Image 1 (cartoon, rainbow, N blue to C red):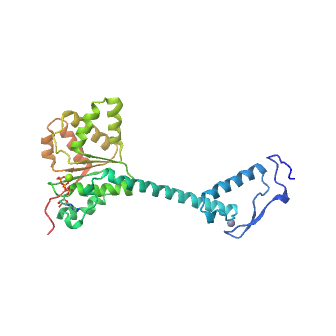
Image 2: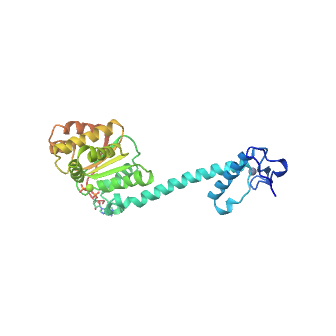
Image 3: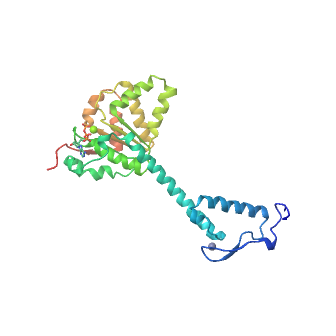
Length: 271
Ligand SMILES: Nc1ncnc2c1ncn2[C@@H]1O[C@H](COP(=O)(O)OP(=O)(O)OP(=O)(O)O)[C@@H](O)[C@H]1O
Ligand SMILES: [Mg+2]
Ligand SMILES: [Zn+2]
């Protein structure tokens, strides 16, 4: 019968286990003059590690060096796996964000300017300068923006807040009626801090003073923190100022002009 041993006592020479590494072919022993306690942890470590490995990999006998290398490889694989899983989750969530008509675009059906500017919009590199797409109805502004947002959100994992401007105003007023501290503040904070804010049909409605004030606050905070805004609008800055018609329009438009690149599109079809 085997005798019980005290944990810190070194493993006797004759109980060392000589093995051959299946990776590099070197001989190694599983308990080399280490205190028993340490070697037990080492063995536990190996077992825990092995349980996470693929079945055929799990029973390979490896020396410490090859085990470390394999552990490092496994760690990298885990990180890649987690990233792929997160991407898949965003892909899965995309239909909740993007209206069905904007999910696919047929290049042949896009207006000429939308085709010409496709790459400029859709391949826009994430940065603090945002984009304003200006053009008449049917120019493909919203379509281009959603193609870009898909890249930013699904492919690159940027957090995005998206609003049709009219919905933004309604949602804001509804949430504001439920109190600043409880609802409105966290709602505004999320919009201010998202990696990307997309405002579709900016200026298509007349803003109330409350909406204009909060919008100004959002634009101010985002530009101050170098966070981009993507806007689609039928308005040029002149008609927008006219529509907003209150004192915050000037500074708001100045900021939008200063911190965004403008792309103007017509709705002429391809010839
Ligand atoms: N499946 C499709 N693929 C590509 N283009 C399409 C498709 N369906 C419609 N279109 C074209 O897309 C354009 C409309 O796109 P979009 O809704 O983005 O315009 P918009 O500029 O946002 O207009 P609005 O100012 O009214 O919001 C139209 O020219 C239409 O012909
Ligand atoms: Mg649109
Ligand atoms: Zn080895």
